[in-house]
Image 1 (cartoon, rainbow, N blue to C red):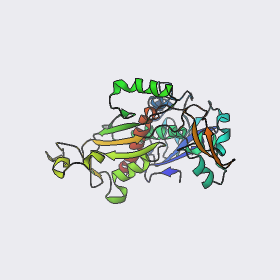
Image 2 (cartoon, one colour; image 1 turned 90 degrees about the vertical axis):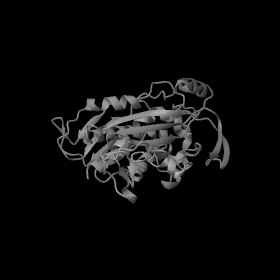
Image 3 (spheres, rainbow, N blue to C red; image 1 turned 135 degrees about the horizontal axis):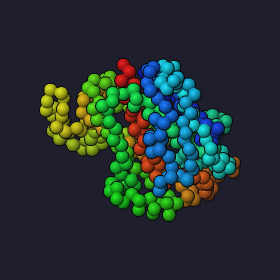
Image 4 (spheres, rainbow, N blue to C red; image 1 turned 45 degrees about the vertical axis):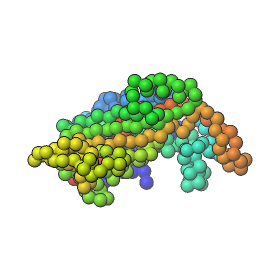
Length: 325
């Protein structure tokens, strides 16, 4: 459905061009100091404005409407609302029948018998990730203070040289196209023992939430797919002390679905933004034929740029579910 988690539950709601989007969090311990200002650092990392991001500019000011009293969480569900102020719904009028390639336009229309909100992608829009970022802010407050997150874009459009990223964005935007990227999140000082074997392993729970982020098409831990091309003698991580420190970290900090005390390493593949300026041939249900589509609206050249903090938030929320046990 539209919620995730057992001990730290997240429910996202709203539509891209509705009056507001938001998040409701349940399972938050009482007594955690929290204010609207605490969200600003991470929300600023998600805001548009930099090269390669959408011209849509939302203020993303958090309005906390429940679960907070005298500056501290009450233990009741916490709800944070973000208003939608910069929308251009007229750009999406034709998309109810002229389906955009690689979007949810057609699948949503079929699943919901045409009653879905198509404006800006409706409930499928990456706009809703602002609520996930807010959830990550609160999740981090429930985690041990020594945990630190380091998240960065390590590849853009097949290039891993960050010095080339601006030029890639410039060329791609000039062509009316888009590029994808790979985001890496590292978490230091996670304790040993979080997670369960099999269905509630750290990898399975974290991947579940990461794959819920729009445009995410791949998740790997540690050596990931590269490890499949190695021998066991190359991929194994020798333990070098009583604390479980390993000389290498191909496991990405997880053994048997359980954190082993080493740095957690997860990477996420983000596809190119499917809304592009190039003309595309796609099916129009109103005419029953394939015809040219020119997508209007304001879209990211590389959605992975703003996706970095979203990935970090998802990792934090997943860990918060284990920390509550």
